[in-house]
Image 1: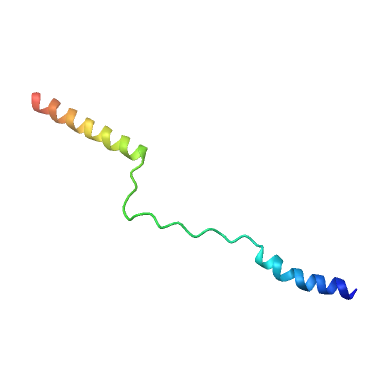
Image 2 (image 1 turned 90 degrees about the vertical axis):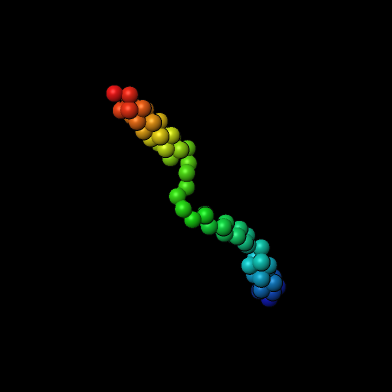
Length: 60
């Protein structure tokens, strides 16, 4: 019985040290609006629409 208590008391610190440490937090994203593929497509469509409308209105 005494040996079991000694083994348990010796193993408890090793169990605590063996736990996995979480990875460090990644850096925060840069400020401002992120431009992903969808935003880029909307921006391009808006530019094309605006240019076509301007040339269509100026020709008449």
